Length: 99
Image (cartoon, rainbow, N blue to C red; front, side, top):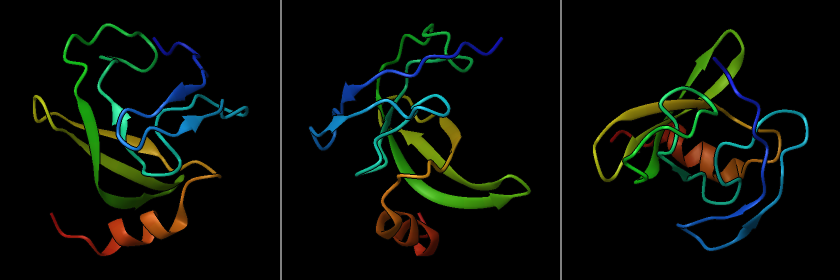
């Protein structure tokens, strides 16, 4: 069950203040694209790992571009849509990065 949580936060990777997304749920930092492994299902905050989710690649589907993350603590793979305000230079870097 999806829970809508759109909160501001300080990115644990780049330390920048990140504002609410406003039109959906903020999942990752728009500056460095890192996220945090806090959900088992979107918005539930039930994951116990709490490792940093490193952006490792980009994929395209019918809804647009998706960031692929790998947890630096447990190795889990997670995915989330690219946000309108994401750093396009970082998105381009990921599109050519083959990790």
